[in-house]
Image (cartoon, rainbow, N blue to C red; front, side, top):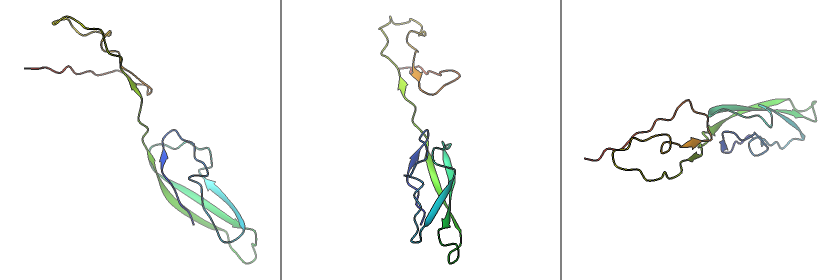
Length: 113
């Protein structure tokens, strides 16, 4: 039997996801292997079982789909010092940072009527 449990991006595959079982003595190999880092989205895991008794049992392969969830980035934005009405916003106020590399930050100013 092959089961796949939840998985998050930037987490190495482990026995938690690579957990096939058999009622027959033997060994499993997995693709991708333990320690692999998968991208977000649906990924196919393959388990190949090689029985110890190759006379009475054949090698078997099973697949399962694992959903890799997107990792939420950490966002830090310290509260800026007060400014006077009419002062243009600058990098002193628009200084948010993230754990994910970005090309640029886009900030939108809320306008009140």
